[in-house]
Image (cartoon, rainbow, N blue to C red; front, side, top):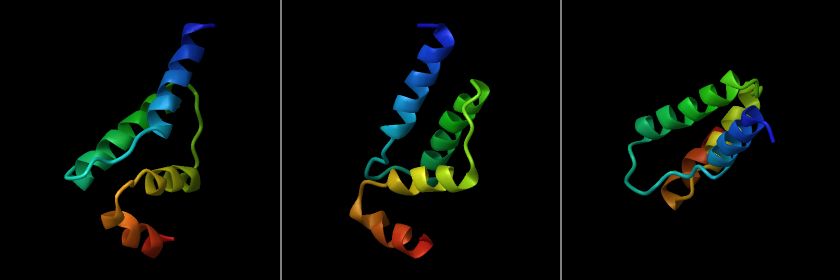
Length: 73
């Protein structure tokens, strides 16, 4: 496997497994999420706004964000 493919796989795994931890500052969490997406864009992985938004909303693993997700959808 090429290094670029391994990098893409690693970053995708990191993004798809990315979940917020209880007590995490939401702004900090969004910054880390955007950083992962930016790294993926650098290795030619394309994201449209809709998919990026859905991935971000899906990454909230705690009930305290459930109302936020429902409201935004």
